[in-house]
Image (cartoon, rainbow, N blue to C red; front, side):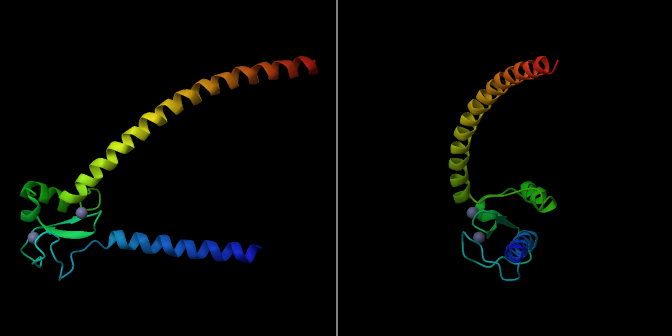
Length: 134
Ligand SMILES: [Zn+2]
Ligand SMILES: [Zn+2]
């Protein structure tokens, strides 16, 4: 029993580690190809990396202004950039996410209400138990 659990845990740890490494090693390879024009991204080319399709793009191919590129490259780890085609998809995703959010908000309201009811009930029960004890 304990053996199986240990195995599962160690293999899971390795997977997460690999994933993290993948994200961190977001360096531009020597031979990165632009996802728009399929030409190589040279050292002099400003390139942006799409986190959804995991492709590099020339800034000029995606219409990324130089100011934005500078910010992106400066805060590489914190900022996310999506290419035009993924952005459309992400937009749709965000739309459905906001729908889910509305549902969640309703659920939260419900939970708050239930919690209050539960509290009242609990207080009542505690009072009864206390009365019993005395
Ligand atoms: Zn290009
Ligand atoms: Zn993309």
